[in-house]
Length: 118
Length: 129
Image (tube, rainbow over all chains, first blue to last red; front, side):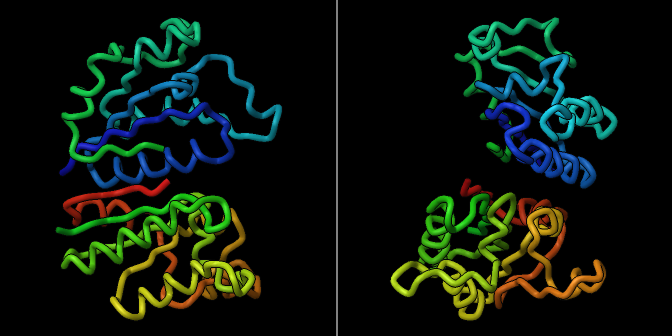
Protein backbone atom coordinates (compact mmCIF):
# COMPACT_ATOMS: atom_id res chain seq x y z
CA UNK A 1 0.00 0.00 0.00
CA UNK A 2 1.19 3.50 -0.80
CA UNK A 3 0.20 6.82 0.72
CA UNK A 4 -1.16 9.24 -1.89
CA UNK A 5 -1.66 12.97 -1.45
CA UNK A 6 -3.72 14.84 -4.04
CA UNK A 7 -2.85 18.53 -4.07
CA UNK A 8 -5.80 20.41 -5.55
CA UNK A 9 -4.92 23.98 -6.54
CA UNK A 10 -7.64 24.79 -9.07
CA UNK A 11 -11.12 26.17 -8.44
CA UNK A 12 -14.11 23.85 -8.96
CA UNK A 13 -15.89 23.76 -12.34
CA UNK A 14 -12.69 24.40 -14.29
CA UNK A 15 -14.09 22.22 -17.06
CA UNK A 16 -14.21 18.52 -16.13
CA UNK A 17 -10.83 18.69 -14.32
CA UNK A 18 -12.18 18.27 -10.81
CA UNK A 19 -14.49 15.42 -11.76
CA UNK A 20 -11.74 13.54 -13.57
CA UNK A 21 -9.22 14.09 -10.77
CA UNK A 22 -11.73 12.83 -8.19
CA UNK A 23 -12.22 9.75 -10.39
CA UNK A 24 -8.53 8.92 -9.81
CA UNK A 25 -9.01 9.45 -6.07
CA UNK A 26 -12.00 7.09 -6.03
CA UNK A 27 -10.18 4.48 -8.11
CA UNK A 28 -7.18 4.45 -5.75
CA UNK A 29 -9.51 4.23 -2.76
CA UNK A 30 -11.20 1.24 -4.44
CA UNK A 31 -7.69 -0.28 -4.73
CA UNK A 32 -7.47 0.03 -0.91
CA UNK A 33 -4.75 2.67 -1.04
CA UNK A 34 -4.39 5.41 1.55
CA UNK A 35 -5.57 8.65 -0.08
CA UNK A 36 -5.61 12.19 1.35
CA UNK A 37 -6.35 15.57 -0.20
CA UNK A 38 -4.68 18.95 0.27
CA UNK A 39 -6.54 22.10 -0.83
CA UNK A 40 -4.15 24.88 -1.80
CA UNK A 41 -4.61 28.26 -3.48
CA UNK A 42 -7.93 28.36 -5.41
CA UNK A 43 -8.37 24.67 -4.52
CA UNK A 44 -9.92 25.80 -1.23
CA UNK A 45 -12.99 26.90 -3.22
CA UNK A 46 -13.69 23.20 -3.94
CA UNK A 47 -15.55 22.90 -0.63
CA UNK A 48 -17.30 26.27 -0.66
CA UNK A 49 -20.91 25.91 0.45
CA UNK A 50 -23.77 26.99 -1.80
CA UNK A 51 -22.25 26.34 -5.23
CA UNK A 52 -24.72 26.33 -8.13
CA UNK A 53 -22.73 24.78 -10.97
CA UNK A 54 -25.88 23.54 -12.72
CA UNK A 55 -26.48 27.16 -13.78
CA UNK A 56 -23.63 26.82 -16.28
CA UNK A 57 -24.05 23.17 -17.15
CA UNK A 58 -21.55 21.64 -14.73
CA UNK A 59 -21.90 18.86 -12.19
CA UNK A 60 -21.88 19.53 -8.46
CA UNK A 61 -18.38 18.32 -7.60
CA UNK A 62 -18.67 19.40 -3.94
CA UNK A 63 -21.11 16.52 -3.45
CA UNK A 64 -18.43 14.07 -4.69
CA UNK A 65 -16.12 15.33 -1.92
CA UNK A 66 -18.87 14.63 0.58
CA UNK A 67 -19.02 11.02 -0.67
CA UNK A 68 -15.27 10.48 -0.21
CA UNK A 69 -15.70 9.48 3.43
CA UNK A 70 -17.62 6.38 2.33
CA UNK A 71 -14.54 5.39 0.33
CA UNK A 72 -12.34 5.79 3.40
CA UNK A 73 -10.44 8.77 2.00
CA UNK A 74 -8.40 9.57 5.07
CA UNK A 75 -8.07 13.29 5.44
CA UNK A 76 -8.76 16.59 3.76
CA UNK A 77 -6.15 19.22 4.56
CA UNK A 78 -6.39 22.92 3.70
CA UNK A 79 -3.80 25.66 3.86
CA UNK A 80 -4.84 28.37 6.32
CA UNK A 81 -3.33 31.23 4.27
CA UNK A 82 -5.16 30.11 1.12
CA UNK A 83 -8.45 30.21 3.03
CA UNK A 84 -7.68 33.60 4.61
CA UNK A 85 -6.54 35.21 1.35
CA UNK A 86 -9.91 34.26 -0.17
CA UNK A 87 -11.98 35.34 2.82
CA UNK A 88 -13.11 31.80 3.59
CA UNK A 89 -13.88 30.64 7.10
CA UNK A 90 -14.45 27.17 8.43
CA UNK A 91 -18.22 27.76 8.39
CA UNK A 92 -18.12 28.55 4.64
CA UNK A 93 -16.99 24.99 3.82
CA UNK A 94 -19.29 22.01 3.32
CA UNK A 95 -16.87 19.57 5.00
CA UNK A 96 -14.50 19.73 7.97
CA UNK A 97 -10.84 20.15 6.97
CA UNK A 98 -7.59 19.90 8.89
CA UNK A 99 -5.96 23.30 8.65
CA UNK A 100 -2.20 23.72 8.14
CA UNK A 101 -0.11 26.85 8.02
CA UNK A 102 1.93 27.49 4.88
CA UNK A 103 5.16 26.96 6.80
CA UNK A 104 4.08 23.41 7.71
CA UNK A 105 2.88 22.31 4.25
CA UNK A 106 6.28 21.01 3.08
CA UNK A 107 6.57 18.72 6.10
CA UNK A 108 3.00 17.49 5.51
CA UNK A 109 3.74 16.67 1.86
CA UNK A 110 6.97 14.88 2.79
CA UNK A 111 5.00 12.25 4.72
CA UNK A 112 3.44 10.82 1.53
CA UNK A 113 4.81 8.32 -1.01
CA UNK A 114 3.09 9.84 -4.04
CA UNK A 115 2.12 13.50 -4.45
CA UNK A 116 -0.28 14.22 -7.28
CA UNK A 117 -0.97 17.80 -8.30
CA UNK A 118 -4.05 18.29 -10.41
CA UNK B 1 14.43 2.59 -11.74
CA UNK B 2 10.82 2.01 -12.79
CA UNK B 3 8.82 5.05 -13.89
CA UNK B 4 5.08 5.49 -14.38
CA UNK B 5 4.14 8.52 -16.47
CA UNK B 6 0.89 10.44 -16.86
CA UNK B 7 0.21 12.96 -19.66
CA UNK B 8 -2.60 15.46 -19.09
CA UNK B 9 -2.67 17.93 -21.96
CA UNK B 10 -3.17 17.62 -25.70
CA UNK B 11 -0.38 17.97 -28.30
CA UNK B 12 -1.90 21.24 -29.55
CA UNK B 13 -2.49 22.78 -26.14
CA UNK B 14 0.92 22.47 -24.54
CA UNK B 15 4.40 21.03 -24.95
CA UNK B 16 4.15 18.93 -21.78
CA UNK B 17 3.44 15.79 -23.84
CA UNK B 18 6.65 16.35 -25.77
CA UNK B 19 8.48 16.92 -22.47
CA UNK B 20 7.12 13.54 -21.30
CA UNK B 21 8.31 11.94 -24.53
CA UNK B 22 11.79 13.44 -24.12
CA UNK B 23 11.94 12.34 -20.49
CA UNK B 24 10.96 8.79 -21.48
CA UNK B 25 13.54 8.52 -24.27
CA UNK B 26 16.24 9.85 -21.91
CA UNK B 27 15.19 7.45 -19.14
CA UNK B 28 15.25 4.48 -21.55
CA UNK B 29 18.67 5.52 -22.85
CA UNK B 30 19.93 5.56 -19.24
CA UNK B 31 18.67 2.00 -18.70
CA UNK B 32 15.50 2.77 -16.73
CA UNK B 33 12.17 1.05 -17.22
CA UNK B 34 8.88 2.73 -18.19
CA UNK B 35 6.08 0.76 -16.54
CA UNK B 36 3.32 2.55 -18.43
CA UNK B 37 2.35 5.89 -19.97
CA UNK B 38 -1.20 6.86 -19.05
CA UNK B 39 -3.01 9.52 -21.07
CA UNK B 40 -5.66 11.39 -19.11
CA UNK B 41 -7.73 14.60 -19.32
CA UNK B 42 -7.00 16.24 -22.71
CA UNK B 43 -3.87 14.08 -22.90
CA UNK B 44 -6.01 11.45 -24.63
CA UNK B 45 -5.67 13.50 -27.85
CA UNK B 46 -2.11 12.10 -28.10
CA UNK B 47 -3.78 8.91 -29.32
CA UNK B 48 -5.90 10.58 -32.04
CA UNK B 49 -4.81 8.49 -35.02
CA UNK B 50 -6.38 10.75 -37.63
CA UNK B 51 -4.62 13.91 -36.48
CA UNK B 52 -2.84 15.34 -39.51
CA UNK B 53 -0.61 18.25 -38.57
CA UNK B 54 1.22 20.15 -41.35
CA UNK B 55 4.42 18.46 -42.58
CA UNK B 56 6.73 21.05 -41.04
CA UNK B 57 5.28 20.59 -37.55
CA UNK B 58 6.05 18.01 -34.87
CA UNK B 59 3.89 14.90 -35.33
CA UNK B 60 3.62 13.91 -31.68
CA UNK B 61 1.29 10.96 -32.28
CA UNK B 62 3.71 9.36 -34.75
CA UNK B 63 6.52 9.75 -32.20
CA UNK B 64 4.50 7.81 -29.61
CA UNK B 65 3.64 5.06 -32.10
CA UNK B 66 7.31 4.68 -33.03
CA UNK B 67 8.31 4.64 -29.35
CA UNK B 68 5.77 1.87 -28.66
CA UNK B 69 7.06 -0.11 -31.65
CA UNK B 70 10.74 0.24 -30.78
CA UNK B 71 10.61 -0.21 -27.00
CA UNK B 72 7.29 -2.03 -26.42
CA UNK B 73 6.12 0.82 -24.18
CA UNK B 74 2.60 0.38 -22.80
CA UNK B 75 0.63 3.44 -23.95
CA UNK B 76 -2.77 3.47 -22.25
CA UNK B 77 -5.58 5.91 -22.97
CA UNK B 78 -8.22 6.37 -20.26
CA UNK B 79 -11.51 5.06 -21.59
CA UNK B 80 -13.79 7.47 -19.73
CA UNK B 81 -11.71 10.55 -20.60
CA UNK B 82 -11.56 9.38 -24.24
CA UNK B 83 -15.28 8.65 -24.53
CA UNK B 84 -16.08 12.05 -23.08
CA UNK B 85 -14.00 13.63 -25.87
CA UNK B 86 -15.09 11.40 -28.76
CA UNK B 87 -11.98 9.23 -29.12
CA UNK B 88 -13.17 5.63 -29.42
CA UNK B 89 -11.34 2.38 -30.04
CA UNK B 90 -13.04 -0.04 -32.45
CA UNK B 91 -14.39 -2.31 -29.67
CA UNK B 92 -15.89 0.58 -27.75
CA UNK B 93 -17.35 2.08 -30.94
CA UNK B 94 -19.13 -1.23 -31.66
CA UNK B 95 -20.56 -1.29 -28.14
CA UNK B 96 -21.87 2.23 -28.64
CA UNK B 97 -23.25 1.44 -32.11
CA UNK B 98 -20.81 3.84 -33.71
CA UNK B 99 -18.37 3.41 -36.55
CA UNK B 100 -15.04 4.58 -35.26
CA UNK B 101 -11.47 3.44 -34.74
CA UNK B 102 -9.58 6.50 -33.63
CA UNK B 103 -6.60 5.08 -31.77
CA UNK B 104 -3.19 5.49 -33.37
CA UNK B 105 -0.88 2.46 -33.61
CA UNK B 106 0.67 1.38 -30.31
CA UNK B 107 -2.05 2.79 -28.03
CA UNK B 108 -4.62 0.78 -26.12
CA UNK B 109 -7.68 1.93 -24.29
CA UNK B 110 -8.40 0.93 -20.69
CA UNK B 111 -9.57 2.17 -17.31
CA UNK B 112 -8.17 4.12 -14.39
CA UNK B 113 -7.24 0.82 -12.72
CA UNK B 114 -4.30 0.75 -15.15
CA UNK B 115 -3.10 4.07 -13.74
CA UNK B 116 -3.52 2.88 -10.15
CA UNK B 117 -1.61 -0.31 -10.93
CA UNK B 118 1.20 1.60 -12.69
CA UNK B 119 1.70 3.90 -9.68
CA UNK B 120 1.91 0.85 -7.42
CA UNK B 121 4.44 -0.96 -9.62
CA UNK B 122 6.68 2.06 -10.24
CA UNK B 123 9.40 3.52 -8.05
CA UNK B 124 8.52 7.00 -9.32
CA UNK B 125 5.29 8.42 -10.75
CA UNK B 126 5.59 11.61 -12.79
CA UNK B 127 2.67 13.70 -14.07
CA UNK B 128 3.26 15.92 -17.09
CA UNK B 129 0.39 18.36 -16.76
